[in-house]
Structures are given as structure tokens and as C-alpha cells.
Length: 431
Ligand SMILES: *Cc1c(COP(=O)(O)O)cnc(C)c1O
Image 1 (tube, rainbow, N blue to C red):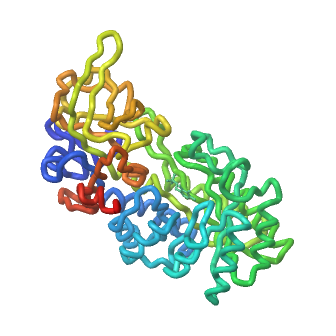
Image 2: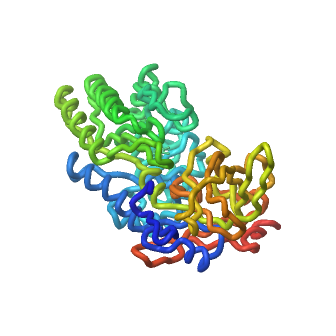
Image 3: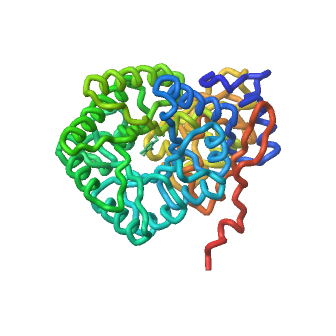
């Protein structure tokens, strides 16, 4: 199967050594399931590769927008990772999980004054400033609080990551960051260096997401180090940290390519060292910010099948008891997913259909052109694989549908990490 933590045992889908049909019995439907062992394994790929090839100062940060809830922050902390956060909500969740926020990096292209003050109040270690207005606000608010704030500047290296447009961020024409090519990156660097309450700690770039092209991080490394050397020559400023962002791709369907992340990090490390030597600068401490590749294949979603509609001469629809409210990614990007009947893995899949949700929207589709066993019927368990990233995180209460719980499995054991929303949760803020 698509990931080594999935198994067919007598026609039933097991995930992280747990029987998925038993999980849906126990916790109800629909349900997100996440495999703790797999999350830890994914973290270790980064921690081990970065430290092996780039030394003890190198550190991966978990881009927590991929999946943010308290238990995840505990796990990544135990694995020795920092975090990247993009909102007060993520900062607060990490804080409530006891995460040491000195190792948090605060992103977003538009931090309000309230966001900035909140993050400073909670002791967020680093801000990643996107633009000059934001830098100005950080400097002003740090000054009011009588402190100096560590800041990385988000730059755009002008690389096309060969991924889909909605998640490409490294081009010059982007709402994120300052472009090196146009001189704006240098301008904002000089400005940051002039601000009394900003401590410029270094530079950041994030080229895109779902990246399989092993050249992308090599090119970003070259461009960013050349920029750092240029700044050193001109301003005498040496970056302490270089954050290369996230974006390694994961496999959603069998036809997706694979990328060996540890091997790619080894190549990136070799390139960084060679380039720094050529440019005659010390190598900054390296950061990477994986999100998807930490949690995506550590998750799946279980649903109960409901209505099956056969429209002769057109197509077949299989409806499930969730949909765009728990996974909007097909509606947003036409994202491919592997779909299985978890209780009928041994039956041939010869029934072509679209798997659709229960929400009042024609676009509420989980996947089209799927093949399921022809015996598919009400109450079968349908599994959508690789939903650990950007599913729970993107869930909504559209149609006043309650958000699903997150159940963790770990070597055959299971426990609740996020409770299912109740109807009272749904009306909680209505006055
Ligand atoms: C989204 C994002 C990431 C994580 O990207 P993945 O594709 O999930 O690895 C990292 N850094 C920044 C700045 C991001 O916006």
C-alpha cells in the first residue's frame, strides 16, 4: 500500500497496527486517525539528517499549520523540533501544550499589531517578517515593551518549484516576502539593520509545497547564500540563521513520485558547505520547516458509506457522512487521494464512482473517478488515505456540521487527541 503503516489483514484495513473498523466502532464516524509512531518517524528523518549533515546547530521546525492541536506540539517537542506558527491561535495552542515558545517562529504575511503584541507577550522567539510595514510595527511594539525582537526576513529567491499555483510561493510575483531579484530584499535588510529594537537573526525563504524536484532546495541554497555573502560584503552583517522553508512532497496516490528526504538533505548540506566555502563565509545555522511531510501520511479519515446513487448513462455517486467540511482539498485544488473500502479490501474494485460528501454544495466532492467494490453498501467503512496534513487544520463548521475528533494510534493502542465537537460546541458563541 501507499505507506508502510497500512496493512491488509484478512480484508480489513489496519493503520499503525490498529483495526480501522474497530476504531470507527469505538469512536464513532467520521473520524480522523493519526499514527503517532509515524509522526515520530517522520520527525526523526529531519532531525537526524540535519544534525548528521549540518551539525548540532541545525534544527527542523514543524510547520504547524499542517495540523495544529496540543498533542502534536508535545510530540514534536519530544522529537527535538522547533515550530513555525502563523496565528495567535497556533501560538496559544502550542503554549497550552507546554511548548517552549523560544523555539517558535512566527510567520504570516500580515501580522496585526494585536498579533505582534500577543506573540511578544507569550515569548515567541522569532518573528519572520514579511515586509517593511510589518518590520516597522515589530520594531515599534518591541520598543514599547522595552525589548529587542529577533527577526528573520522572508525573501523570495525567484524559483519556480514546479508545483501547483495555489501553493507556489517562491516566485517574484507572490504575496509573500521580498524579492531578491528586484532589490527589495536588500532594501528591507538595510532597513532591518537600522531598527533599534529589531535583532536581525537571518533570512528565510519558502519556495512552495508538494515539491518533488530535488533541485529546488539546492537552487534556493545557492541563491540565499549568495545574497548573504553580498550583504556581508556591503553591510558587514553576517546572518546567524538561514531558514530554507518547507515543502517536501508526499505520496497521495500510487502514481505520485517519491523523494528521499534524508538523501536530499544530504545533497543540500553538501551544496551549502561548498557554496559557503566558495563565498568565504561561515555557514549560518540551518532551519527547515516541514509541515506536510511530518503529518500527511501519518493520517487517514474514516467515514461510513450512506446513499449510493446510480445514474444510468452518467455516473455513480457514493455519499459519505463527512465531506468538504473535514477535507476541502479536492474542492480547493482537485487534490488526488487514495480511497478504499476499509472492510472490503479483498474484493475487486470494479465499481466506478465519485465519492461525495453530505454538505449542501455540488462541489462537495472528496474524489472523482474512484473504483470501489461493486458490493459497496450503506455502513461500509470508507477510508481516505494521507489526510494528516491540511485536513483537520482546514476543517469548517459549514452546514453547522461538527468537526471530527482526532484519534491517535500507536503500536496497536489508541487514544483521543481531539474530542468530537458537540452540538453545544456548535452554538457556544451564539449570543
Ligand atoms: C506552509 C509552509 C510551510 C510548510 O509547507 P509544507 O509543504 O507543509 O511542508 C513551511 N514554511 C512556510 C513559511 C509555510 O508557509
